[in-house]
Length: 193
Image (cartoon, rainbow, N blue to C red):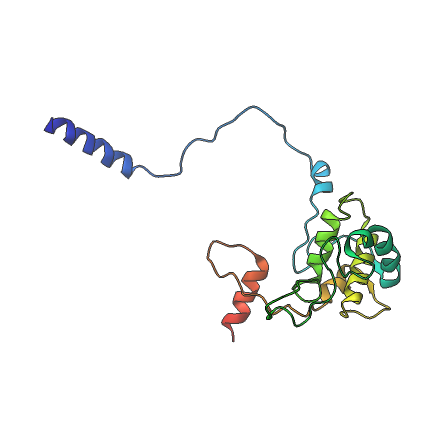
């Protein structure tokens, strides 16, 4: 019995000494490689710095018309919400007992607004808006929140330049396993203070 225990211990030691994570890759024989042109229509993410923003432009005036057609039924005539979330208002409410998280009070980057509208709106037909329409609706919503003036025309460069009121209201994610470019930038900036 003691010999069997020593043998099992030896086997266990050998197994523990083997390098971990070097299992051979499995090939399942399903699927096919995708061409870039196949992936491109789905590769639509936009990061906080504006990487991924498409060409296009849209004005507050154009956005006003599009918002009435595409958004008002869910978000209210002026973005006040009902039945869906409010998009306007809430400034100064985040530290209260009843915070109202809207584009103007909570969102840290205007590029995130574009990204969300482009991917998910309108609710009944996501990804159906052109880049020009998304820029225009973004401009209108930023205007309703008092962030840009009425004569604003947004494109990739001007949208990236918009400074949101709550830009500094978020804490950087300093975990070493994160690769969020915005957070790495924040860590660098915070370390220099």
